[in-house]
Length: 133
Image 1 (tube, one colour):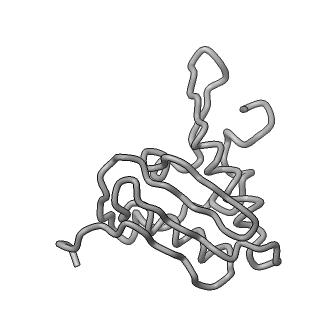
Image 2 (tube, helix red, strand yellow; image 1 turned 45 degrees about the vertical axis):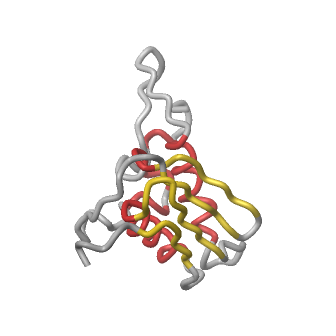
């Protein structure tokens, strides 16, 4: 509903499949209230979920600590659509909590809400390659 207020807390308790967990992050994070939380649970080390922790999380955590200092090697964001919304990421055992920053929530199109091709393959993000960080 276009006039619905943004949610303050969203819990992804869906399938324990990396592709679906990443899809939830890209879909929900823009729609969450500033300083709200997205909780992705059941990221346990099973083959179906492994890529979330081994491919997606390293990229988004690197983006969170983005430097972009032009005096050094040029740094690029892996997920430029998520970066402007992130305040913090907290992961423990089988759960990750993504905290929104103060930027307003928005309702992107379904196309804009899709995860990019590199989401589960960190080799596709130039800034994750050796010598870029």
